[in-house]
Amino acid sequence: MNVSLSKAQFFLLLFIIQTGVVYIAFQTPLIINSQNSAWLIFIVASVIHYGLLLLFERYYRYFYLNVFFRWVYQIYWLLLTAALIAYMGYVLASWVLPQTPEWVVVVMIVALSLYANLVRPETVINIGVMLIPIILLFVIFLMLAVPDLTWSNLFPIEWNNTKQIMEGLIHSTYAYFGIEMYLIYRPFLKQDLQVKGKPLLLYQLVIFMFYFISVLFTQMFFALEEIKLIPEPITYILKSQEVTFVKRLDIFFVYIWLSWSIVTVMIFGLSFRVLYLSKKRKHPKWSIFIYHLLLAILPLFVMQFQRIELVKNSLHYVLFVFTFLLPLVIICWNKWRGKSVS
Image (cartoon, rainbow, N blue to C red; front, side, top):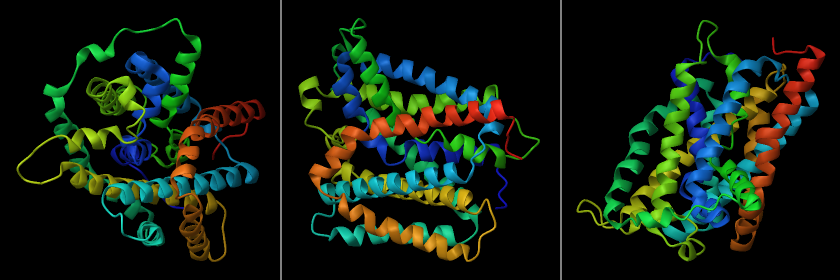
């Protein structure tokens, strides 16, 4: 498939993948498992994430996917996207659309993704530009909560509990899931462009600060016992803020989050398209249609509170395998065999 990315497009694509859907909720499992040390453990997780980015930049040419691994990732993205759509539908039903049938929300999300993926790939790539101002609003309006923060909630830090540290690091993968997309889209970057050095460091600092502020504010706004009862802490923080231009700030931002998350779903669809069409296929549009038909059906089996909770409590292990472990195994295997992306 003919796609050529600039550095700005590449990093924006990666940013939306890594922050969409999970941004309003990943703080809860991280803090529950890390307690007061969550903010410090997240810093460590971010250093590991940056190390992986450096590693992927150096060896991305060896992320060659044979037929088997192409299908493994396509099925993984299908199931992951279905889980994300189910969670999106659950959040909308909880906050703004309690009377709307679940299938209507799912069809709306999938239809938008289908439309975007049936046209030129550049449509999905460039649509994220419109999200930049509204994503920044999240950070700006979070600052309204500063007077309500309790700084002592960040202490004491416990750094001698190995199990707690490991659980915190693993749950931090929610914030950085989708890092394997770096390896998928890096070969599409224009040949004369380099991302190592300052551009890669700048990207890491931006995504780190974006997430780190949300972790700090969640820890300082809620007591540890409260966190266990707050599934979407960022939305609750916004709900508590009073502004003159809108009655409920949280609902306003839920719709922004929805737009942001739909673009994430579109990019996962584009990633399926990139891998599937890496070989010449007959009737490619039918394949994209079937992929989205499955996306419209699968979330309906998950969109219940108990099942959503089950997915949330186990997904981090799946992310660890497909986001970190499997890419490293594939890179090492192909490097040993001398096989690389052309």
